[in-house]
Image (cartoon, rainbow, N blue to C red; front, side, top):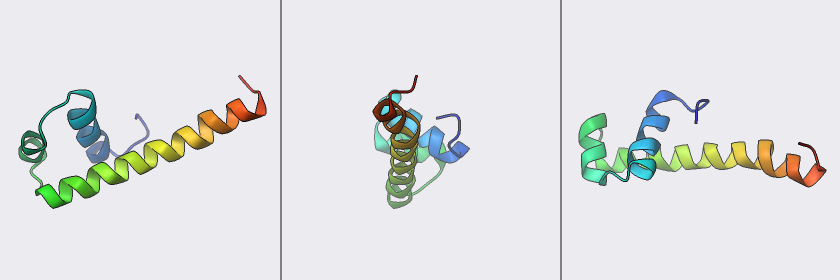
Length: 64
């Protein structure tokens, strides 16, 4: 998560890790619900890509 842009990391952290309701996250970040969904989607995509490249591919090659 440290490599995500700040806004994406904040949205993901508040919603997923802290389990804050979407309405609260929108208020905290000063974004609309539609924008929040886009931000969260982008955060998830980047985290997925990072896991695929840095974790799953490494494990498939047998590296530590």
